[in-house]
Length: 268
Image 1 (cartoon, rainbow, N blue to C red):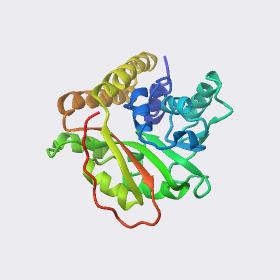
Image 2: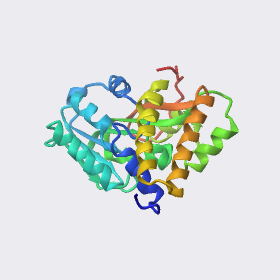
Image 3: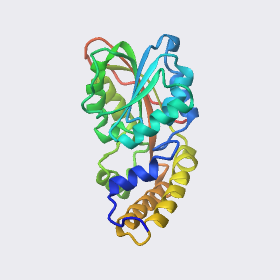
């Protein structure tokens, strides 16, 4: 029997470290976002922020021939990231380092592309884009996924859930405006399809958590942790038409003059 006093953060890492992705997404959606970038063959340096174990990073590496640096706060994810890069013989140009998205160890205008799937809402959409901008060269790209409202109706139960998780949702239009305020030209936005949540995240996560419940049988912390994740799945089943992860792609422009808004077409 395992240690019943294991922390929630340790449970989060243990539940997610063996997953291909640590949040909603898919290889197909990563590739779709890449298609909005011009001159992809000229991209020499990429940062993947909040990279986790690197599921999306390895997809990027299959389509971009430059060097990619993954950054994550947790050593366990970075160890898995570097193991995955080595298994794919990518270790010469794909490297993971431990670090914070809010305190990056990079030079100004070091990157052609900054990528971040399912992580920017941890520090705030506009705050993250504003800070990360200085690390991009002019006309460099940023591509992020962020949970967003998809309808004008915002169910209170969902608002409460995301606020308690530390991520208040905003509308797609609000986030596009925020991207432009942060000094980017808006390129594209599209919503991730339902299977990015269900098949690619919830199902494998549930299998990992079943193993946790057996390992830490009787532990109150693990029971509460798994109960919270089951509630997230129930909410998505009930309210999925109202919210979802949206990919936002922008291009760094000179200066910070605010642009006029661009309509969002929606859909995947």
